[in-house]
Image 1 (cartoon, rainbow, N blue to C red):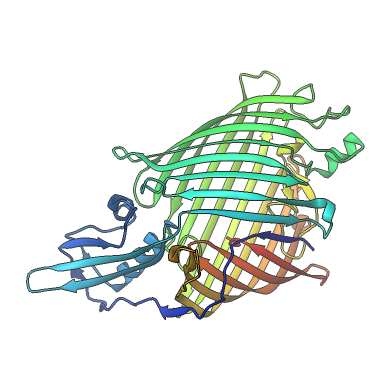
Image 2: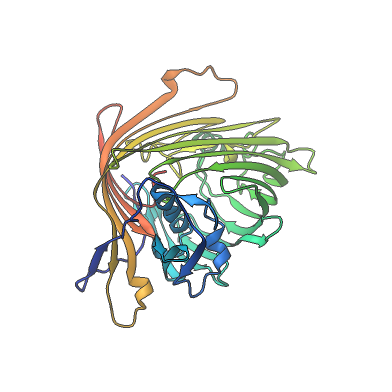
Length: 440
């Protein structure tokens, strides 16, 4: 079993004040609004909030529209509280967006223990600075030591130009990643770590609230410090240097992006590696489709289908698809497997024990923005199934491994989630999983 903790500190040392998030008092009848007024955004610019709405002043809206857009604004991850409601007087109808801003600068320590072995422990810290100019820009610096060390820095600006609506991001990383490929370890005759560095820049165009397209370019350096590198690397040496170029498309209608109750997410991406290098030329295609439903205003159902396909003259083993690391089947957490391609499916049902409560309490020396959050707790049932296969391999249902189980999910928004799950594999063997983040 692997215990993976990438944490958020939540202290319940004093009696918290909890109250249900106010519900919008609107009938199913549509009401025309004359103006939109935003309250509580001390740092965040108005246009960052307004661009998330799928309506504008002069439009007619109903209670469903208000509920959906409340979650869209909350999905920005900038606020601990969001409410939308109508105020009427004799001359006009106003839509009020009431906000409480979250804390934007915080360190997040993390700990990653693989296979219950102390020698396979990675640890470090992530420093996140969100919304630093009130424009939803994010700076992130991460450093990790131990089993899988790296240094990482990124900058994201979701609206660097307003007309047209252009997003910009950049990142750089230096790392000594462990070899994930079983077959590479067999070829090398030993376990080993790569030395790798890369940089990336990306520009995206937001076509409307639900459609975005991106282009990105970067440089990659990968070194295998071993003697037997043939069959592992893409080039005829133990160092691969390559330029990369890619395009992607995103269709996203989800309401609350961290934990959706309804909507669809579709991502498509293709990357070419080896531009300008005659000895390297291969491609990576990714497709990710997810759908979310709410039944009886109570249960949340969701499913996911993902496909990763690598093809070209010679795909290096470090760019194969892997199970047992970032992607894993619950029930096979530490099972390692690699192949050119991966199919991954998951189905999950969630039942709330409680949801949509505002937690707020005071602690000495800590700002209230850091001790305020929207919390919820869910019971979940899940089923995961995945298969890895090579390009020339005959594919069938025998390639799939599956796991199923149940768990408890604690949401602490806008920060993160903590999951406690028990999963069984195809042979009925169980494992207990603790992790942070959202399953999908």
